[in-house]
Amino acid sequence: MYEQLFTPTVQHTLDLIGIFVFAISGALLAVRKNFDVFGIAVLAEVTALGGGLFRDLIIGAVPPAAFTDLGYFVTPLLATVLVFFLHPHVERLQTGVNVFDAAGLGLFCVAGTTKAYDYGLGLTASACLGLATAVGGGVLRDVLANEVPSLLRWDRDLYAVPAIVGSAMVALCIRYEALTPFTSGLAVVTAFVLRLLALRFHWRAPRAWNRRSTVVEGE
Image (cartoon, rainbow, N blue to C red; front, top):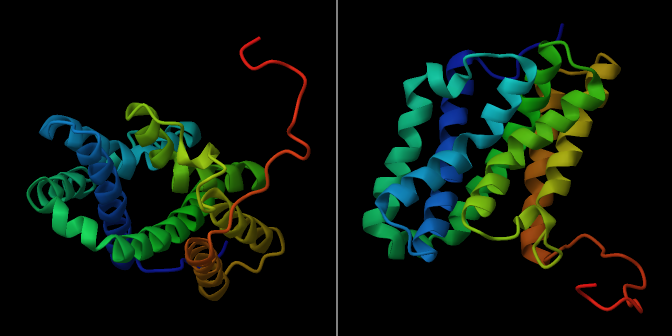
């Protein structure tokens, strides 16, 4: 068994910070879509908790943490209130939100992978659930907002790839019995930095080679 990266109290605090930042991104999209206050709250909750709910249901950690810890549920509502009244100011802080979002991505992909492994999944499955924990809420947010998920769009900066790298690093460390607070932190930082670099330099995943086709679109 490996050491925990953080104490339970610190881990809980970091979870709430990540949930809050993800909720901000969901609430901002709802405002751009002209949703009412209920729609803003729903999108904030789904974005913040969707990935963790999916993971917990898959691994059988029921009831999920989002339903047993009131803080997990209330935090997105606080983000909703903030965005509802101050969304022009929050929009101006988008760079800062992106930084915290990248940090949440790193924390959640690592925490998701380790929790899945703790519940008996194999390394590959654990890494996949780490990815789902990090990006699942964003996918649900985009679907509910009637948009193609950012995860699937070629014109968006890399988002899933940093989470995949972080999750894979954790899985490899578990495989070679090298998962310690240091290596876990390294995985978090790696995912975080990759996401920031993707935002800074607009890194994007390659599209299919030679996309031109003789097939008429819509056939």
